[in-house]
Length: 395
Image 1 (tube, helix red, strand yellow):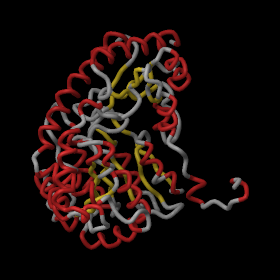
Image 2 (cartoon, helix red, strand yellow):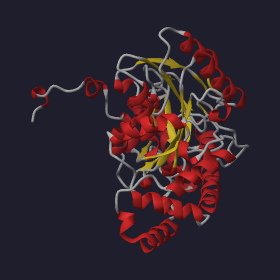
Image 3 (tube, one colour):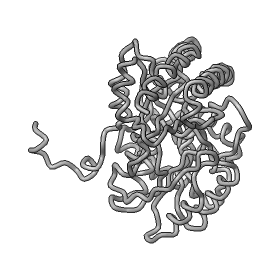
């Protein structure tokens, strides 16, 4: 049926396809050295432990593992214990299992936002954050992000102070996608205090904190939350394997029934089989060794990327230096348009994501995001060399 014959909802009218997804679809040629996606390397995925966990669940639980069922109690208990170790005192009853952190964003957006109501997000942020705010017709107030210490707290307070009061704010605390920066300890405390002072709920979107390979771990913003206004989102998709599409949400216990109803209107529940398999994987102690392997590989690959950038573009570009996560944000000379260069980079068999794809209000045309996790060090050096040739030709 033609779109012209349908009366589409207001949300559908506002919602746009992720530009990042469109660009990734173009860069599927196996000969392309892609630094575009946010994928872990295939050889780092825990194939055998996941296979063993699935087999164990099916042998133990039989057909029950293939039925509808409530959230897995053991998995919720593990998450509660993990978060308590990170300084967030919570019980299993406050843990809600989702289909990835993105679904947590969607649930909280639907629960807290009406079309036209104000929401605060960073001016450069993950496209999924844009989809659950701008895409739902929110009146978005954008705040800048310092490339060394994270979100600008003064701008955040200014946005909170404006009337009407924002219905929510979304922040990425660790190894920001796409900027790679983490919010400093002092700013985390300040954000929690601002949330309490102005009564603005914070959604702490934190899929990357476990992917640290250098420096000291920082406590979540949620650990400083005295008013119960910070909602925390975590992800097994990033820490174990993307295809699991599983994450968790932590919120006040009295709101879990509301969250449950919103979730049921979407897709009822997360796969029983996969919940039990992840719980089995965690009980077997596989996560720690898996994260250690990931950290070693990511450290080597990030060092390769930073070294290649210094060698090839050190005289004309700057970039962030993350201590974890998957991404580096590169700033080029103002006369270089990373969006216009993208087709030329593909001709040289190298891919990235132009920074404009993450910019809520436009601009940032001279920036780009590079992923270091999915290529080996030698491939990274080759990819940056090709990219540098394209950039220098344009500059």
